[in-house]
Length: 464
Ligand code: FCB
Image (tube, rainbow, N blue to C red; front, side, top):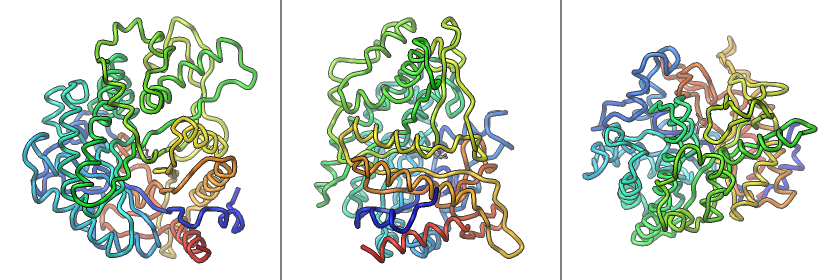
């Protein structure tokens, strides 16, 4: 369903329209400017992990093209730009000395964004952990909480006089369960218990960094708006569920959603989740006082959402999902129209998870990522015709409007992504951009969906 002009007018006047990227996915220049290797550089080198053996080079060569990329954002009329800082650029040794060239890159970027009237929204960690820290156990080592807080403090110290919107982590579910239990992402471990440990340490790192971010911003004369970005997903069971189906939904929901919502916003883990994972051994990684640290008050909540998750009851003795505590949960194939990722397009589920996120957190919500991949090509007329992405954009903005209508406090929407980029294990095969990137020439072409997004933003501005 397309979003009507009338519905667009219902978005608050100060609603923020932006686009998002992440350091490893766009920067390239992985060995320049004093940057050290990240766990993703290592992962790309492991046979069979990343499509076509693609690597973080050249990506979008944004490390050299940042200035014209910001100009492009201004042409699109973006209110805000969400990007992430690469820890291995800023502190190549993981802990210790700041690399002036590394932080200098983000310093110039922030200045140019502000010059163009675009609000920088900075994510401190979007999956590129310095390899030197993985060598010391990475997210399995409890010390990572301190390492992350120190690194965050260094970045805020440098940029906090101009940047007030800070996000600690992007999608901790992916950097824990997907990376340590399911082996799909770096560092590629396959251990149910490790996923839980990494998740807890990510939460602890987040909670340890929150007061540091606030203090450093205050010292630089700004009031920090501190946030975390989660990727909750609506878990859908059969239409007429049995008791066992409901139990499967509950188990999946705990390890996909409750695992972060509860510690962050309710100061505890879901009780039933702890029971479901009890067979993995005592949760010795949870120390007294941790949940207080983790539930430090936030100013807003970032939500990345693309698709729902379907499950039903299966054999109670087996766990085909390989997610901790999901014995008896059977994954169900996505329904209806799929994107090029094979992801279900379901705006109603998008609306529902936004409402849930707002209810769980009672915080203003920003959709920090939403979008779709399609096999785009530059046509003979020089344009990129991507009607499917435009339709997805429209239907999901209409879902945002519905969630707001139902009471959710939603303050902004960031399209994923500003431009095509390195899509993790899929390499350069999947294109999510509203701007097309030719990886041979690095030429950027605004896709039809990008032109449509710019038109919607301009219409919203005209009214506000
Ligand atoms: C999200 C990631 C982002 C991008 C999109 C498609 O899970 O945060 O980097 O890969 O998916």
